[in-house]
Length: 400
Image (tube, rainbow, N blue to C red; front, top):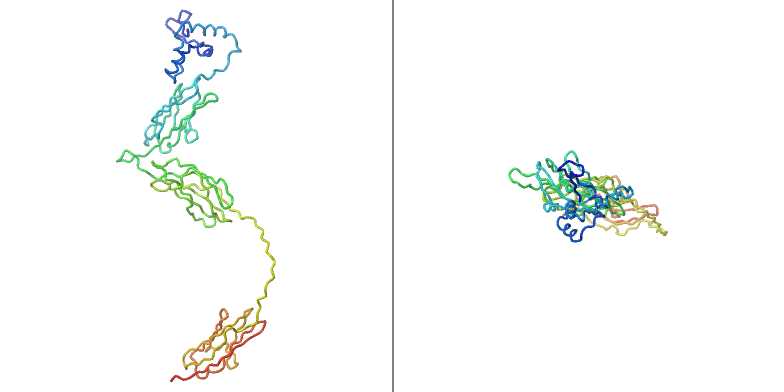
């Protein structure tokens, strides 16, 4: 029997629990029908099955005798074995997002099982809890998470880990702390917070790989995606690469060779983009490929040429007082020097005449000619390889 009375030396009416039941449970041979019923009766409690198995005095006498025989053997004092595997019984209400308002109390009681008593650990977004704001109490069969006054920063993913030896069980609880309006009891959507961090993973060729973590605050509504932007180090201007991108990693392609780029990511919901965005700490340097160019040998062609007129001057007749222009075309390499002559007299520097030469087209303008401007006009082209000239006759007549 696992209980003894005061007749053995204790005070009358006092009951003392004998350690023989727990330490020798492995030697305690339960009736098969009793073990099945006990397991089905209360699967989450480790005390009741033991108490139910000890109701038969005949069966209980065996373990007690066995314990008295083994008590003097120090070689049999081994570590307690795992009698119940760790398991978390997550309430149905916490299987969805748990919503609380700012200033309200968060009090979560999570039952679990495991024998001997397992080790419990809480984390918030993968990090340890802030003990100045969050309190945790761990009992034999449950763990309580308590926040006296919730804040927006308390939103996120909370994870409970129950570990016993090499076995463990985990449960995830998503908590959303909202700011209700003065009129409505529900929270209006707001702009989301920025992604927590962004990292430049790899750069190859004209491509760069980015990774980032979702924002802690989604603005009381679902995210529509992320906006990825790039900026060249030379200009510093930001250009959008991806809009409403749903994953937390991407590859940015078609980057210009020889430039260095920085990247940033905005979170977006139905209210718009986040006010700020994290920027990559490292720049993506797009290296130039090492190419060796071997020029093919070729014979350079000599394009030198002596002046040659392809379009000669044409004789013309003009009226006194009306401007007249003479045209001709010349081809030469190198570029020739153009000289205009009238009756074999150089016209350079005479304000009455204006000479132009462009792309091999030569022109001479005679401003308000008089009868003395008639005669033989010559255009001469000269370069290092030779010279050429063309003539024409100009007659100036009085108006009728």
